[in-house]
Image 1 (cartoon, rainbow, N blue to C red):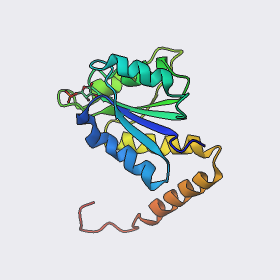
Image 2 (tube, rainbow, N blue to C red):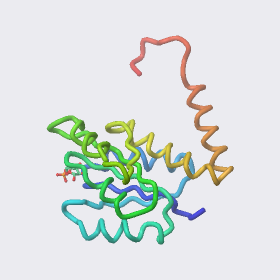
Image 3 (tube, rainbow, N blue to C red):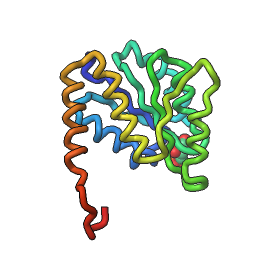
Length: 164
Ligand code: RP5
């Protein structure tokens, strides 16, 4: 496997507060990743160069987060054969429903695997990327199993007075 199999791209610096959760999850699983700001609207040539070169650069999965008119995951998917996982970033105006609709409603033929809005989607995109890579990486599959086991063990049987 490539040392950096996952690329996490996002449309803006403002998306990092959400997308950092994907990066942190991949770090916890020992999955190499690169993070880049690539805007479909403001830096279209950067997007073109990234997406066209992603496979040759050694990436195997792309996680793309964007908010509002969130064309980044779909445009990326249009220019690479790699699986693209889309994270709808929570927008101020419409709470991320706009982002979700922009990312999830791809026409047949160019898929984007779309996750939940916000932090949950970022974490789950990383877990899904890791699961894809784990199909060909038994050591990573073991780390994913451990991650799930620890999650299971962390769930109390009885609710406490402390806030979650
Ligand atoms: C999108 O526009 C970005 O993905 C971001 O979620 C949204 C707002 O960007 P900023 O105005 O905060 O840079 O392209």
